[in-house]
Image 1 (spheres, rainbow, N blue to C red):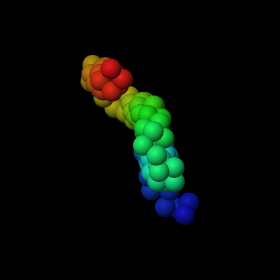
Image 2: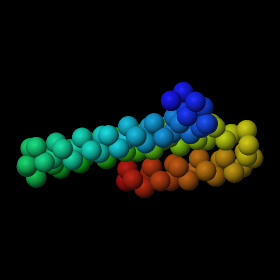
Image 3: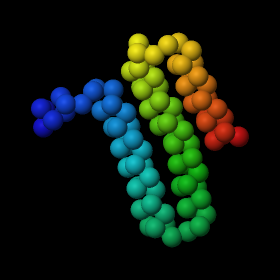
Length: 93
């Protein structure tokens, strides 16, 4: 297993790990919605996912931006950062 993990870039592994964590939150929410079988509780659970999703997105993008910071120009990095900010503002407004 150690040799398999050595094949991947550590930043990519961390980004994938965060996405796996996000997916486990989503699956847990599905199970909880079915368990409680209530529209009100399903809305509360879905609302909590709306908070967790952007946080995971920001952390994942931050890891990726730090990983490529040395490979691209500052202007391109700033444009990507601006795009991430616009997505978060669009989700939260």
